[in-house]
Image (tube, each protein chain N blue to C red):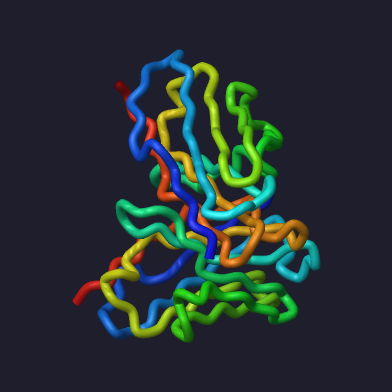
Length: 121
Length: 107
């Protein structure tokens, strides 16, 4: 059974880097049929797509994050990771990892439970 | 970028009520629309894809309709497990965009 589980610090200081990892079980990250994405939901707001990675290293990012975001994959651990630099209070959110089929890309069939990250000193 | 607008933001209803949530896209997305159910502390659940395709295991009281820019999610008879938030999402053009969500609460 496919499961995704986010992990990482629940508190990050302003101007620092937010780093989260998603551990996948029940499916291989090197499956050509899937992309692996990060999505977040700030308190009281809607969901926001952050970015996407294919196991061969192809990435797509939401332009609203400009150059602050990077997503990487570690097939040996069946994990993929999110890195968001120069965080502010506006980056406080529940962060989700999710799976989307390669075709059609963008429909999220499976999600993790989410992890809350607060940006505060 | 495509903007998604949901209404209402909050919907108060009782068990057994018929509930309808509307989602509008700022431009034509054909039928590339998904609906998700979110509950605190749980993994979001895909309910409907391609505007009207019910996902496996989703109760038949859920239905979706629409194309182009106007879409609806209907729950024909609200059940206790359905009190949650519902979010639409377009996946026609990247960056994928979500609506702001509709919280269905007990009346």
